[in-house]
Length: 489
Image (cartoon, rainbow, N blue to C red; front, side, top):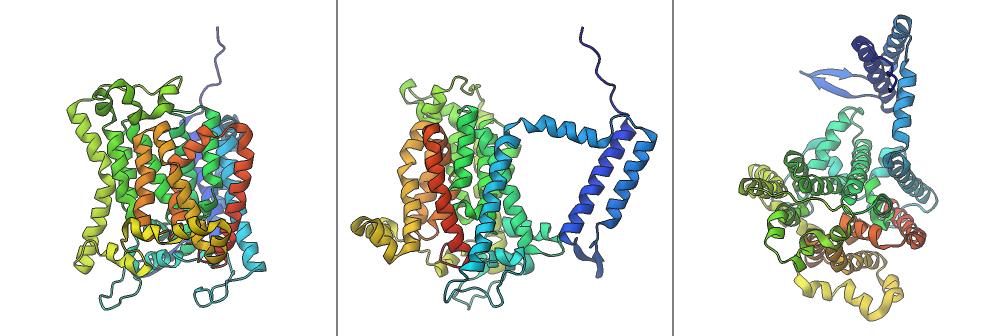
């Protein structure tokens, strides 16, 4: 007979412990960040000091200990930590997250201090390294800062770049997190990016575990974090939020969790101009049960991939009704709905719901089709080789290599994981190439998580160190270029 465990703590004790923890966390947050500053009905409100919350937390802890000494709070917290210590989250995801993100920031800091800004860099007046916020002020971060600070502005007589080209989800998150940090919007953007990336790593591991064992799923997460252009997950850019929304939508839709999948899909559509394209592969995921039921056995791998067939415990396909299929298809359309919501706002602001698309021409993004791709950096790379291309156009060569890598993995990804994953890579590589050449292709490929699923599944364990070494060198190079205002954006 199993011996009875300790009796649960009284409710009032658990409430005191919870209040103590919350107040202590709030006090530390205020001490580190300086606290929020805002106005209510014209009156300034400031919470600049964490002293009072910390004192209240200490007082509650003392009262709790005097009245009820059994199982004190610090022991409960240590037990909770021990329970989590043996999970993949604490063994793999958190160490990889901390190591890669701290390394990127350190490389960026040292690069600015030792190399300095590029000659003739378009750094804003007064840009320096006075604080973490200034280190984050690079390229598009200035646009997100402007939107978070003052909102969207549009001048129809101004032909140059305007902030309506950027979608609202990320700068709005910057704004609201910034309220807690005393309007430190660039630091808020970094917190949003890092938090979203950590969440995306967790979701990618869970998604990978649907068809891979723990070792290969962990490898996929590590490849993602070490990819050369993964530096944007630690910058004030949208990559982290976009990745989180995309992986979250795939994961929850594949499990039939419609509300969560809808929320993530809506976020994707509100995050980046190409977000609505994610609806295409999501429609394949939504229709997967019907497609499998009406496809010959020899071709069913197209909807689930060879990896799912080889899995010792493949995900079960339950029959779905016509109503459920329609709901799933509606969920898959949420990225498009997100884009249309932003379009409705722009219609109110400018009279043109799709002006964001035309605004991108100021950055050189005009549709040229396959002929534009064939006549640009790709052609130079093919005709003159890697070394000559790197000497003549180093930044375009880096982006060309990233685009080539993504294009080369379309078929292997499709073969192993199914058409939905292959479509995600195809659309989000081919369309930008035809509408801007290799511009920004490095960071655009960083969010194509099926590539990293394939790397985790296909690269043998003995070869992973070499891959990760090359990836790490590439990420360090890109970090140096990005933080010193070279043209990696």
